[in-house]
Every structure is written in C-alpha cells, then in structure tokens.
Length: 308
Image 1 (cartoon, helix red, strand yellow):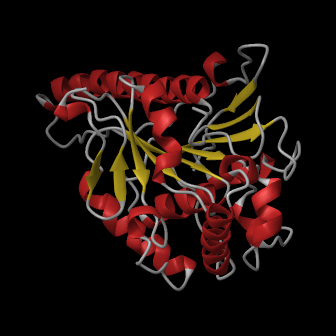
Image 2 (cartoon, rainbow, N blue to C red):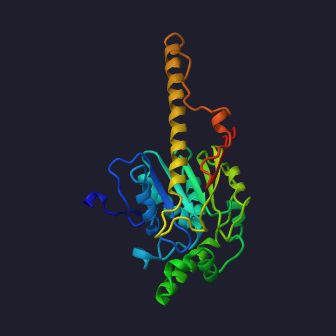
Image 3 (tube, rainbow, N blue to C red):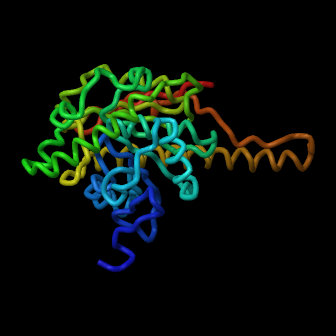
C-alpha cells in the first residue's frame, strides 16, 4: 500500500478509506445510528476504482469521542452541509442507511438546486414523512442495538456494549428533534433499498420515497438485514455500481443531446441574433424509463422522471 492508497481524513467530518488517484465518481456515505465512518471501509474497497467513498465521521464516537453531537437535527444538517461544500466538485452522490438515509436526504435538500448530488440512495429507511416526531415506531437504544443487528458486531464485550449504547442514544436524542418540512422534490435521482431480511421494515414502506424526487425513482430489495454495509460486510456494492452507472450514463446522454441542440441553435443565431440557447431538457418517457429487472437475487425498479 502506497502513501496515496492509505486512508485519510478530510477535516473533522470526512474519512476517505480507499483514496483513488483517478475517480470518476465520489460517493458520500452517511452512517446509521450509532455508526461511524469505518463501517464503510469494506464498501469503499469494493467500489474502487469505480467510485471513491467519502464517509461521514460523526461526533461523539471514534476519533471525535470528545465532541458532542449537535443539539438538533437541523444543526446537524447545517454542520454536515458546510463540511461537504468544499468537496462537491465533479460527479457525486449520497448513500445513507437507516438514520443516515434521512440525513443524506435532508443534506441534499439543504444544498442549492443545481449543486445537489446526481443520485441519493436511501437504504433501510422510511420516507421523511414517517419520521414525524422524530422516530418511526419508537425504539430505545437497547432495542435498536439488537433489531439492527449491531449486537453481533460488538459481541459480548461489556465495554464495547456500553460505548455502543451511549453512541446510539446520542443519535436517538438528535433524531427525536427532527421535523419533516414539506417542500419541492429534489431533482436528484433517488433510489430506495431494502434488505429482504430487515426485521424493522417491510415491503411497501419505502414506496413513499418516490414523491421526494422529480428525477428518476428506483426501488430495490436485496439480500441482507437492516444494516447492509458494516465493518465486516461490503454491503450493496453491486447495486450501487449499477445505479450510479445508470445515473452517469443518463446524464452523459442528456448532455450530448443538449450539445447537439446548442450547436444547431448557435448556427441559427448567425442569421437570427435574437434567439437564445437553453441547455435544460426534460426527457420524455422512453423504453429506458420503464421498470427493469436485473439479477434474480435482487429486485430493482426504475420509474420515469416526473415533469415539473
């Protein structure tokens, strides 16, 4: 491993577990309640060199143990958004699981239109409206530790257990301050993911994410429990590669079409100087926009963008 390949931090908030010299896509990963950036190390190595993972380093754990969590969910979003802004050059997307999915979505909403991620992937989480009052189907730290499968990760070590419960509780306290504020859908593509063995969620509970995007919406069910990516599991690496590739290909196709339109209009402008050029298009529903199915061990569906 060279110096360039070693994990590195970017400020207080970000960890790059597997730096890439030439990255076509940057994927910011938001951890679950009680989780930290290190949970995404296996995923980062699985996605390299296709994508470079930048994982969120949350306060009150790991290398930031002495730093308190922000007092409210709104302040957490503000802090995360400020930390990400300097690193949003080039194509990028968000992936979050459980509480991290909600944080990823609200961070995308907090960014200005036109600067938002190409795609937001929300795993193991109900839509924002279900979090009214902070917690869908209220759970305490102990319950969440077992239901989410985190108990298996910490084993029987009482010290690790105490640390884990304290971290989960800190996140739950912030989560309870969350209030969903209805607003326009984001223009980013949005893909919801459910583990087929998730004891906390079931079929149909993720459908409501569709109304939160004016881009394409996808829904996949894949093998796994509530936490898909962990310190010892790479998680939905194949699915992420697929949906990110699809999003990038669609963007490239749209830009190529826009360039042709711009070229034609530029030619027209030579004779009619009052004409202007527009590079924003709304793609009509095509065969590619219809729901598609892929490998037999996962169900993936896409629906067309809604007109705005």
